[in-house]
Image 1 (cartoon, rainbow, N blue to C red):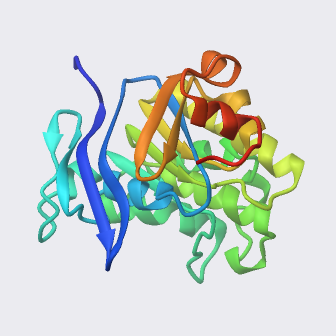
Image 2: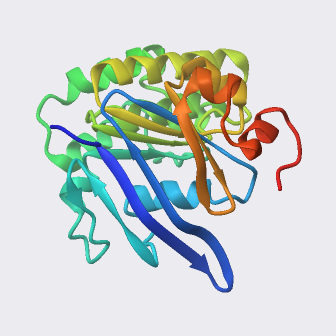
Length: 242
């Protein structure tokens, strides 16, 4: 397809009297990994949930692969199944690692469950733990299992919310490698992160969310080395943003 694979236009969202997102625009192309950065409380997770159809904006429109999300009564189920959302606090079913990863395939009626689960577990170096109860995994192992579960049905868009927060270097390395492999094989990734070093390592572009709007978006190298907006420059330099 031509045009953006994911596009948000004029997004506004408030919770009570607090305006979180204000006339926000964002678009991305196939093969792009966007690192979404910004101060805590700037609305990054809210935006990610809107992009995935989990939270309805007050105003604005989200298009996925050219199809507009309607945010009502499960009508977006088919298009939402082309995406996957991974939070920093995954939930495990009371079963084995294998069954956890197989679960979304069984829900969708896939017949090649063994092949897909094996491939997904290999991607995150968990094949040797396939028969372990998921509840016995460490935090890093659990997040790797959750990544395998989120990608096993090969969604075209992957939404990651601080997916390596509080993990040790080994687990971060495994997950970052898995993201790169996914991007080569599939569609596009939006990654919320507070880790600017991670954004520089694996993203192809970066976007700065501040005061409810995307202040600046550009190729990763130029975004961090030569930001055009003074607020972006202050943020990447670790300074107070006004």
